[in-house]
Amino acid sequence: MHGYADVTPLLPDAPDATRFDVTGFSPSEAGASDALVTTAADLTRFYRALLRGRLLPPHLLRRMLTDTVPTTGSAPPAVAYGLGIYVYATDCGRAYGHGGSSPGYLTFTLNDRDARHQIVAHTNWNSLVDTEIDDDFWAAFQQGYCTRPR
Image: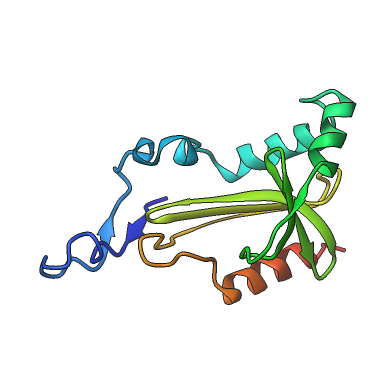
């Protein structure tokens, strides 16, 4: 996937610099926060292994999901965070996951408790300008998550 970002905040005097293909940029510029390069299939496989207890002993997974602190003002509306995983309130119940962004990209995932129901979104996102995931994205993403196949 190619990532595109509005680089105007970085190059305000550059002519026609509004959209720029940032695919070749190194994510290492942001340190560990951008250190994961993955696919949707890999993310769902990781969360299945994690939430089904194949990566951590049961007592550590339990702590990961329950030793959380409330979040405030987060977008999307996470209700808690702890030990590397967010707990989200969705229209169809609690979901577990995480998101991440770098200039040109946004990746987000939601999973039910045993990762039998999962959704991952990869999209272009202008993190140089947009500092929070907008309500329209969250509404569409949550609708996709809450619409379960019959």
